Length: 119
Image (cartoon, rainbow, N blue to C red; front, top):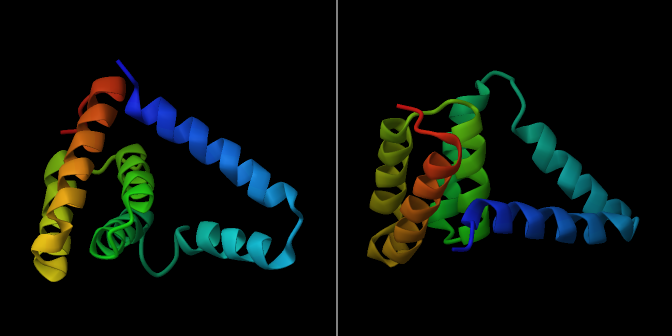
């Protein structure tokens, strides 16, 4: 069986490496801005990850949803917290996000299976 988590992490690392090896100032700054935007500030990291998750779901970006699910998991957010955030994203995004919601649930379950439940 394919390990969804390992597959996503490996692909993301490989492709990010290729992109950043181009030494393009604009791309490097965008990556840096993204990384720094999710650090502790007026909002805590957990809140920022949930905001990123909801935004990603509404924008229907599966890779972004996976990234924020994994970050949320690593920050110690519970399944209940993540499901509540996903419910808000589905409410805002409408029924068109349901296929992405399905894949989000599948990936969260893959994280739980790989690393254990956070509840």
